[in-house]
Amino acid sequence: MKRRDFLAMASAASAAMWLPATRIEASTPRAFTASAYSPGYRNLLILVELKGGNDGLNTVVPYADPAYYRLRKNIGIKRGQLIQLDGRTALHSALQPLMPLWEAGELAIVQGVSYAQPNLSHFRSIEIWDTASRADQYLREGWLSRAFAQRPVPVGFAADGVFIGSAETGPLAHGSRAIALVDPMHSVLLSPRVARGSAQARKPGNARISSLGNDIAKAGSAARPEASSDHERPEPDTAFPSGAFGASIRAAMQALDGHNAAKGFTLGGRDVAVIRLTLNGFDTHQNQSGRHAALLAQLAEGLAAMKAALVGMGRWDSTLVMTYSEFGRHPRENPGKGTDHGTVAPHFVTGGRVRGGLYGVPPLLAQLDGNGNLPVGVDFRQLYATVLELWWGLDSSNVLGERLAPLPLLRV
Image (cartoon, rainbow, N blue to C red; front, side, top):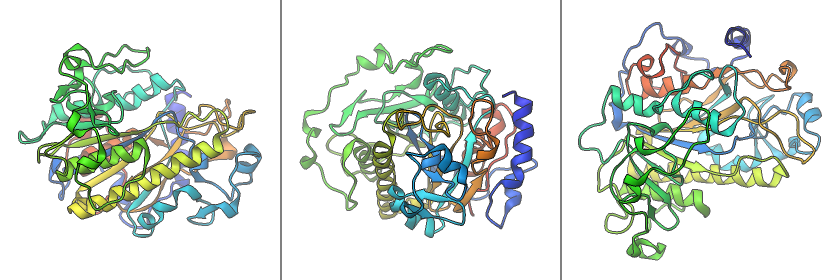
């Protein structure tokens, strides 16, 4: 899809955009103005990467559209197994733990998210998301690294950010000071000291290299023996889900709360601007239904536990949680009862100051492109503009290279 075609389609689809009834003017600011209620990086951002490309149509389901069931005869989710949000949209039943957030008005769902001329390679597409580039543009620095270059985090912070569950620096690449906890189930630190994200090797168009380079490796990657077993560390009040993703959330919350100041991973009572968590396994080409349900359950249970922990710390109102993924899945199921790489997907944004509801462009199954994929409705960089301008009070055009309208997801 050419860029001008994308812009025209997005304009035509705007009539279908769902926004809450109030403060819609916030979605189209005429000029940058720093948020009146933002204390900058004291507002924490938690990014949750759904690695592999999440199937948006079986996450936020257009159950009232007959085309959904025609395209997905085997993996389409029956109405009786869905959590209905309104007359045409529902959630996968595995997302039930998110309903208290939805009912409290603290969960925003942004539909139709991607970019013009979507690339369906895992490596290239996540590089586009990590650097906030156009599809035909190759940038070196992660979008968060560019933000921190524009306005450095306060001197007293432990680092710019922490990434947990993956050695890939992603949006913190090439410039950020980041701490990596690659195996939260065993407290394996990639480095016990702050390391530069610039050590991640990248080449345009090639696979991303997850090694952070010799300078970090020499600092030591073995687990600290005294932190290797869970029973040795204090338990927070929150019950975290089992598995690697639950362990990642637990490690992040313990670090913020100072629970393991004496053992294992700790921020030493200091702050960071961003935490990036990774939930693996979304490349569901075969036998998707059971696998996808289990992944969504991990996500929902994890986000619910995260809220409980942050409320207990008094940090829920100063935390913004946002999901992202390299792409969605194809609307039509494949012969293996799975889905292949597609274009758009919905994403979740939650936090104490989030204005909940449905945003963006719902799936337009009657307007599939020549490859049978969904049209793009929301540029993913608008999510980043929302973080940069409304959450941190930065000029997003200096980071993103052009003016993109923030989404009205936050309330004063």
